Length: 506
Image (cartoon, rainbow, N blue to C red; front, side, top):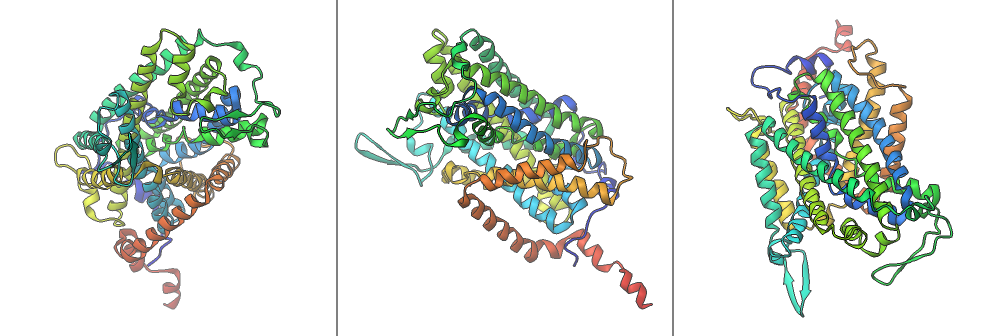
């Protein structure tokens, strides 16, 4: 069996609108909202303060621009593929067309890290913020995993299960089963709420900007050290903690606040006019979020000195800035918590949707069991896949601490970005005459820059994360050679087709 067998563009597009396939219900506006829903999560509130406090200071606005440029390289490549191949499956499908089945399997397996583990991790954070909003009303035992414990007044409390995390996963899984249009509508409402709150913070906070907090704009090399809450001292002397080095390092921190736009490409088979709408959805959501990120970070670093973000705790930095420097606006702090919850909810929704669509496409190719591509007779959604995903993601969310997922979500995403950039270059060479409704500009420069930026991000991740990702990939290869290779529809066809050497024998 040929593990590097490729799907032709004709094979990929011939069955797109066949009877029994996914319903085309999403317009360009839905896709932009889908991208914003995936991108704007807690990253806007947490990553901004972390990057400003540790590395870039007020110049974190420049860090967002650098990170956005890095994402744009990959986004332009995604947009070209999505306009050519309007199929569910995202990077998995693109790899199948350009690099062969085994590479497609590897990237499909890697996307589980981004979507499934990402959804589980975010649902755990959702649980934490709900409990915070409720004033800690949920007992510790029922909002933490069995692997977590805490001492309260001399008594030890151990987690049993994270019930709120399970609850939000169940609600959003049922919504996805009901229908893509319904899910897009709910996502659109959530996006409206959280973007509105972000805009309110920008508008109100602008009045409280202290110009002295933006001067100097970049952290100087001789900036005084900061004493942290735990008594340790944080120094800005190292190259990547100040000046342009701090801006670049800050870009590495906020880069992950952009992750999610690629989930738009998983909905290509449900877009009404994918050749036009997919590039708008992918690039439009990136542009909108970049503008919001820059404005938000300018206001936040203007309201409070960047050193405060080191002292007050990164997750509470926005609420801290409001309560400390924006008097009589306590209600805005509550709204920010609501916005974070809304952000978490839409991220989970899009991640679960993206994972089920990747599994749907892998199943139709024979690489996964048929159950993952079974569609609901009425709603035309991969409901069995959604149910299985809820169980898998739910077990992780209920019984495993969120910290264990670490940067695995990010490494899976960056790996996908690299392969998509490589795929655009390969397809330009192997199929130069292909009609491309959207063309990535400056090929091969843009894809090469995308590969360099994303590879640099992977290298900068902790070695433990890289080793864990390698183990995950090896497990995926075991499954591929033990199950998927034997059941591959395209691979089996390739085995029975005559080769050039067969003709030479005759």
